[in-house]
Image 1 (cartoon, rainbow, N blue to C red):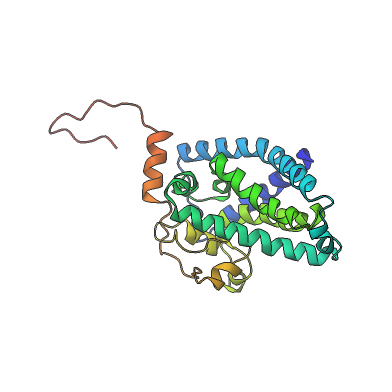
Image 2: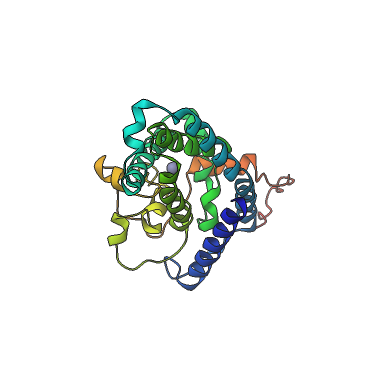
Length: 257
Ligand SMILES: [Zn+2]
């Protein structure tokens, strides 16, 4: 299962990397600074190791809790398609609520700010997440779905879609036409959430439906786009990418580039 997950992830990443080069959002591919790239690579590698482990543990725990629960027997007997659609809505509602709360509550924002510290947004920036955020975002939707008796099989379509769309929605790719923004979280839709002005907009992970219902959706964007929360990028710079100590410039000398 783990190898299948990694193979699928690598295939999606490779395809989107080609799309980024072939047709970037604004016609020009923005090369990320090497330091940003190495930070993202470190987060990505860590996630590839612990997300499947976490998913397995959460599924085992929540299934054990839901097994034999008479309150959810009726839900468990529903057809697969009904349970899969129900899980997509339940998971998206949970993710929307948690994501919005993370932008509103101080200590949660400090965790989520890691994700908003990217100033160059590419597909591989999708997994720059604090480990605690990953735990919260994975445990709560899966726990809610299984706790309601939707069954493990009903989680598969949304979970696969979430993996693909999370990577896609951060990618620097151009998409002609705007109709798809209303259906799924496209790069045009989600990259706006990463803009300096757009943090309180477009919280959806896969389906923008709750952004529309709660009026947090915007279909616009900055021109040019400026990515990264100012506070988050400063914190990340201080904590992880601290530059080597330099001697102060002599009075009258020009600063080095
Ligand atoms: Zn956010």
